[in-house]
Length: 318
Ligand SMILES: Nc1nc2c(ncn2[C@@H]2O[C@H](COP(=O)(O)OP(=O)(O)OP(=O)(O)O)[C@@H](O)[C@H]2O)c(=O)[nH]1
Ligand SMILES: [Mg+2]
Image 1 (cartoon, protein in one colour):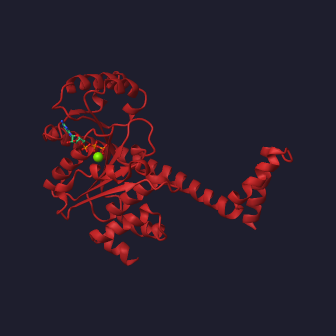
Image 2 (cartoon, rainbow, N blue to C red; image 1 turned 90 degrees about the vertical axis):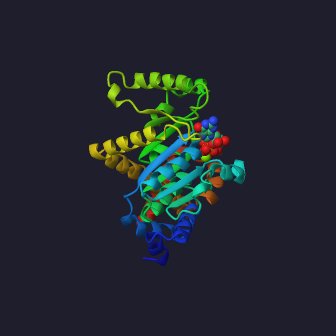
Image 3 (tube, protein in one colour; image 1 turned 180 degrees about the horizontal axis):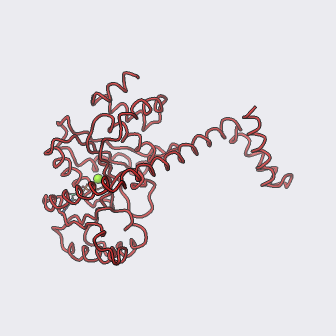
């Protein structure tokens, strides 16, 4: 085991930060590091917080950090910024609304930018969570922006998701019926100090009522919160605990995590095959010429592709 891996397992903050940078930038040594850390993972609870921009996700995360610290648990927050090429660093600063814990060794806060490399931010975030898990954080919170189709699939990254909604998004709720309501395990209506929170709760419960027609006891919790005023936190925290306990007891957590590994395997294998294609077939150097041949009707497209593939695989196995 490398010194870096040992220091991460020992909980050394600088090593943890370096480990995450290594993962984020996909630097050589990433795979060895994750493999070394892997036996030490699986202990942390991994929470997702997602919702539209400015919904109060970071403010809420900040409060949850305090709750966890009060219970003697170590907490890490990873804020994923899927669009940083466009928003630059400005948004990142804004997202880290958790500075009150800067001095606390039991708290680690980090933002991750999407660097657009293959494997993307989801792969990097999953590995960053592994680093934090191995480092001994009891709770890991992953914050992502998103309503609807985003690059980062929060369900794929975490055990349980809080979807943060805010009053005044009635139209969005209409649009959400189809997909987004599937995302949240717990629905947090934040900014309940503002007008319209009760109305939103009714709307959300109405939509969930359809989803769970006849099985009301299975309906997701809907929690009214004001992160700014520190209101509604106890109820939310109790629901989080209750749901997590259920997940553990029913075996669902195990299944979720296996499903996460299945998706990860698919992504990594695809990635590696893609790399192989590029390296061994010299795809990008040849593709222009191949396109020319197809354009000129010198060859038939599928026949040509299958021929090339057979040739490549044969050569590989020799
Ligand atoms: N009135 C009110 N304002 C809130 C509440 N929670 C957060 N805010 C404010 O909403 C703004 C955005 O809060 P953040 O916590 O940065 O929201 P976010 O969802 O993390 O934002 P992004 O990460 O940029 O998407 C800040 O000005 C907060 O002070 C709340 O409960 N009530
Ligand atoms: Mg934020």
